[in-house]
Length: 123
Image 1 (spheres, rainbow, N blue to C red):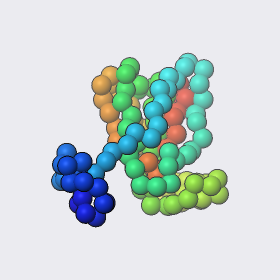
Image 2: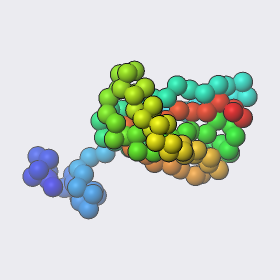
Image 3: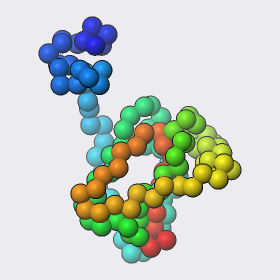
Image 4: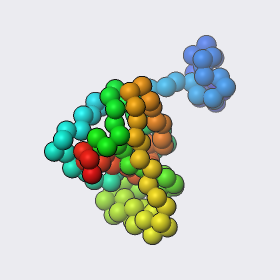
């Protein structure tokens, strides 16, 4: 693995089984859905492979859970047209969205290319 990535083997030891040499935090957000909040727009966090982690600090349930369109990571592109086309394709397949209704301490991990949105409070 170290040879492939061109980094010293010592740096790869913790992740040898995953064939990864480094993990980088590229962004951190803290979100709090308020009682008057509305749905976010459908979007991707990234167009490159990666992971998004959501960790609930409070009960999410009907207070704006993240809504994910499973399989949408396979429809690439970040511009508005490709996001809209991927969303239309997913809805046409009648695949139900997944709601990440989490309790404090729960986490959900998903491909950063997955179409998703934060739902509004109680909507």
